[in-house]
Amino acid sequence: MAEKGILFIVSAPSGAGKTTLCNNVTLKCRGVKLSVSYTTRKPRQGEIDGVHYFFVKESVFKEMISRGEFLEWARVHDNLYGTSKSRIDEMVAQGFDVLLDIDVQGGRLIKEKIPDAVLIFILPPSMEILQDRLRKRMSDTEDVILRRLDKAQDEIRAYKYYDYVIVNDNLEEAVAQLKSVIAAERASLSRVNHDWIAKNFLQEKM
Image 1 (cartoon, rainbow, N blue to C red):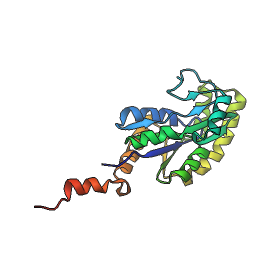
Image 2: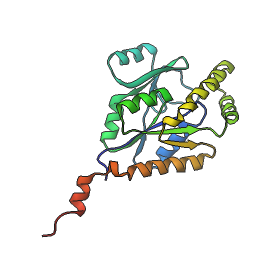
Image 3: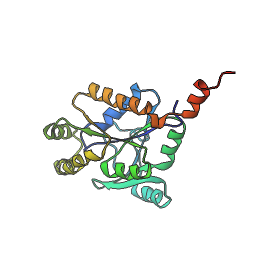
Image 4: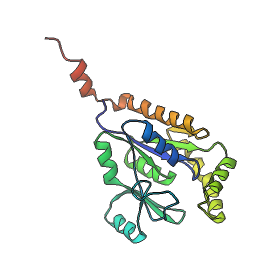
């Protein structure tokens, strides 16, 4: 019924589980795709190039910046991350709803460029649980973990700029809530294809 897809910007402090949450929703919600960002950081164990991120060298990333290929880009935790403008535009134009897993800084930049994007903030149940999750990942040094926890305080303060807030305590419940947000936005009057309704339901009787 909608003319085009919806861009959902999903942000959270590192360790809140937003990537796992987004991956689950794309598997369980028809018509939803995950945007794959570019990054200069090294893959973590189990991550696949082109699936979780496009892993590129910093020189390649900077060339893409110079060509204006990113909708937004930023340096986060000493690594560069960027969102491809052409990939987002293509998926939305094809009618797919797109989940963009991105940090607070990038989310606010994209919202300025795409005002009808929907912002969703994912919170951990507590800072203690967030710290526990980061340590159990076994992918970062103690110094990096402490920096992520410190940055999480600033990121969480940004929740008030978002349209929805979901606490990721139980994954199944969080997935259900995110699916409900997507369903609600799809049914919003502001996104209805009025020409489709007029053509199918409001034709004058002969």
